[in-house]
Image 1 (cartoon, helix red, strand yellow):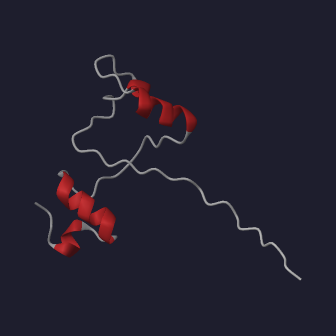
Image 2 (cartoon, rainbow, N blue to C red; image 1 turned 90 degrees about the horizontal axis):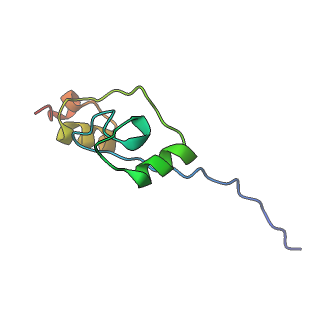
Length: 79
């Protein structure tokens, strides 16, 4: 006999990595200069993390760190 197995629903995750974006440069955080309606909608319908850690102050090592799962110093990509 056939049976249907229920697969648990996987969460939908959207990970945004943006270079040189200040925490108040989006509408939902109070920006009156930049208009970010799509990001604002994502924030209103999902989760917003207000405290974070960047592995390095520049984007390339941080991006490599996220993709590799290692700190930039372990990959010699700190510049």
